[in-house]
Image (cartoon, rainbow, N blue to C red):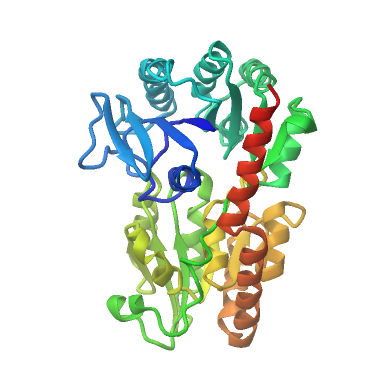
Length: 408
């Protein structure tokens, strides 16, 4: 099978969407499929093109058995709603020649990830012209999130954009997404069950395992062996509800032996650092190397997963799978009826999104109950192995791809 992967995020050395796409590409290439990638130079979450890549020209390289073609991209220094749209439009325009360069290769499937929705028209057009199957994978309903978070406004604007989104979605042969809740939302947008595929975010449960001893990060950070560490690790952007972390840490600043480690980069980090600068119990780190992810996630006694209330139903956070694989309990901002809330209830504590007091009480409850932490951590590992094992998820995805290609 020939698979053309098309999307703005392909940064296997980082986290989030780019990492998942990279692992999918490497897995399929290792299983005998021909895979090519049309993408941008890695720039997220710092909004700065990483050293060794170029924002102004086309480049090509091999990665894990796949050909990767990176296209020019405009990256704003300061992100606003309009600049973000122009940024996405720059990739949508510059990537068209890269798509056309795959004309003679003639892929069987054109696979595109949302966000950004900007890429879908070109992906659809190319797939139709080359008699390929068109597959849309939704990591995040960016249109809904943009309006719910106030980045886009106006009833008429929302109706127009939502109609365009539904029109595009109806034209894909397959639509996959990462949770049952998000599949339900796809149905509400007019997608029939015959075209829907479940493709949850996965974890390499063999690479990230519960530590048998103390994480080396404790000594490196000067954290006492008997301290309880509450860890947030991931993107620091608008949808994470990071202000809750500062409020919670302030409420618990006088709790002896409780330490907070906030790790990540993004547009919201500077404000979070400012709000926490007077708290001795809070430490900040940049994103850690992927090869040390197991040790780093094992630093936690408690994982923190805040979300904004107005975005909590829209996403199944990709960082959750690593947390569960590390065998540590999770405190998450999630409504009980959501899939995140249901998963968290099995191996941690789910509280109302945006409720800093409830979040602080949940963290304190786990911090003072080591046996409960141990039991919930064991359950977290069981959930990771049963639901999110990488090889099992990707093997099913491979079968779904082949079934899609067979329906010509």
